[in-house]
Image 1: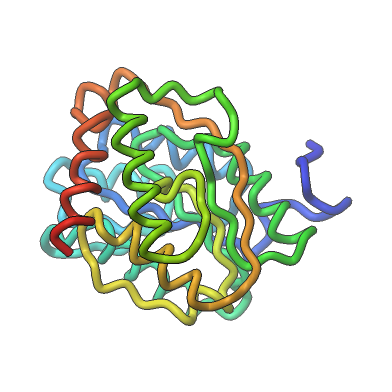
Image 2: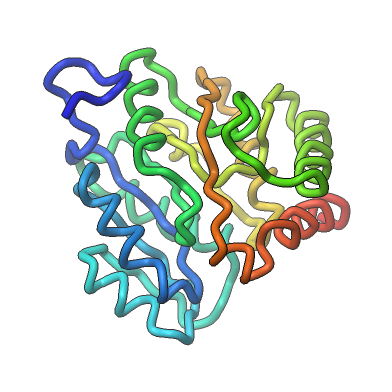
Length: 234
């Protein structure tokens, strides 16, 4: 298969790419997410954040490496655990952060790795607002756009989507950040700390799939409100 943005003969599944997935109570979807990732990426690691529904076992069945927190610490803590693990891997060059709930598309992750390779950029941020494929709904769009404005004012970067969990981070950038915000505020913290590295970055248009599953969990608006609350109180 030919992948957009990748040099001839270079596949995203090279040993230098690791997909890091924060995982909390996603047993009904995580196997499918991992199996789809494994079609393109060899190295997939889930950080199970105190799940009570068997998510860790499901992730292992699908072939992922699984690290476990004994209690729920939050998505920021899960990412930091995954980052520390990857930085210890001798051939690691890129990390892809990927959500566990099925909202991200594997082909977008592939293209973002390709962009990082071919244009020698250290950070690629996925953005659902660079095109019109993603349909977040009016209220969610307003909340997310407000969060983008606050984040850009705080960090000095000019992103169009500051709270998208799909990112590609080269390990020289990864080694310079340490997340201490465990909950939703980590999304702003990671932008701030990546910006401070002064390493080159890009945005890439991605589509987020708002599924019946994610809406049933209340994530379509609730997570966006949580982002704003954490931005205000952090």
